[in-house]
Length: 135
Image 1 (spheres, helix red, strand yellow):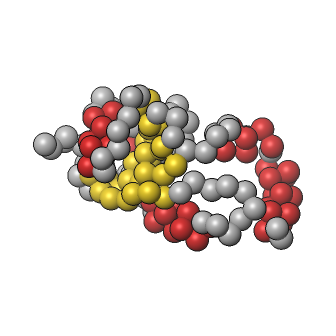
Image 2 (cartoon, rainbow, N blue to C red):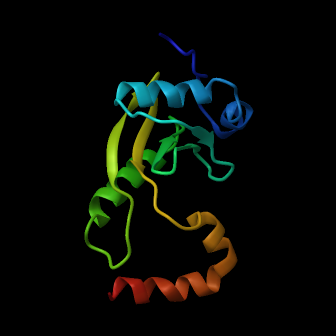
C-alpha cells in the first residue's frame, strides 16, 4: 500500500509537511514491516526529525531525504555501541519508506536528550564532552 509521503527537496518543504496526517500511518507501516507488536504509537513533540515512540520501548525516526542526518546518526549509533560508559540506544532496524530513510532503535529511560542539553547550556555542554571522552 502506497502512503503517498510528500516529496520534498528543501527545509521549507519539510516544514510544510512536518505535521502531515500521513506520518502516524508511516510509523504503523514501519512497525508492520519489522514485525514490531505494539499497543501505543505516539508522536514525539521534540526533534528535527519525525519521531514516534512505540510503547515505552522503541523509537522510530524518519529522516528528511535531503539531509544527511540519517547517515550521521546510524553511523554514530553503530560506532558508539558498547564503547561508552553511558547507555546508548541499540539500532534495531533501518530502511526506507517511499524514499524517506528511517531507523528503529531502543528507547532509553530518562529525559529526552534535547531537553537535557537545553538545560545544561552550551558552555557547560562543551566542558562535559572531554570528561565523557576520557572515560
